[in-house]
Image (cartoon, helix red, strand yellow):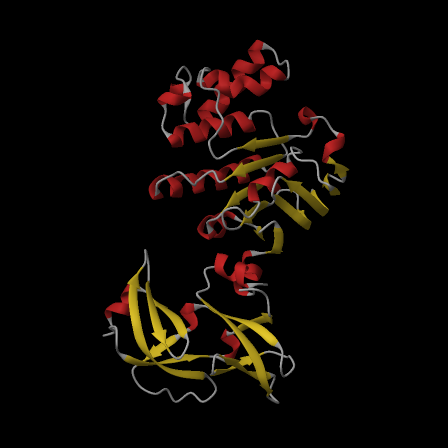
Length: 356
């Protein structure tokens, strides 16, 4: 459906480098990355707003730049909605149909139907600046969808919403995807949005595509430290292989701390290690499981997050564990306490060294 073929693009001081990826027809695809990574530029390039210096952007096998904008079947909704402030909501939603020279009767029928679909019929005579952010978002989506695009591009549509409205709108977006059956490409820096909606994701940083794949592929087997951070992995280390076992494991040194991991490499290889904090088991007594990594350390801090507790342990290196509120309530953990950490060699994901 959408294909980036070795796209390079320079815009002022920012560049996209050798971007190649495919987005399948009907997918809900996310582009995720930190601020300034190039997410919006990538989205605008799909829309044909930026001509690559080299490479091609193909839609249905055709170069997007060989078609005029009105023939591309693409709708783009920006983070600030970009509604026309001087027009009523009815006229905002009707804009695309009127540009397409649809009859007055057809415009009224289609707009009335779309306003009803989004539950904003009662706002038809209002103007955007008199409405809430959530209401403006619905107007922007109605205006985009009324022209029946094949591709809907969304630039951080949930970033300005409070948690309650965000959760409600995530359900709305899921319903839109299923009901309209279109390809949606959404930009975000929030992994929670991607987890809730994405079929597949791409991670971008500093204009470079780091990894594409399913949620499980990207979040469980990150290709680089930046992907791991976007996946919410707390434990990211640089290490060097010091020994190879005969059982498919190797020994890795991290600042004087030795860990065993399931990995095939060579002695002397520099590697990155990633361990989910939920895989780190805490105990007040020395565990007896000889097949696991066991580290001894002291709790440096305990921090409450929205739905879990984050525990920082000094084991010669700082290691992060996490516990649910229910688990935390059954433990007597406090800063300064001596604890043991246990995790399997299989819990460690390893890649060849990249910049952390």
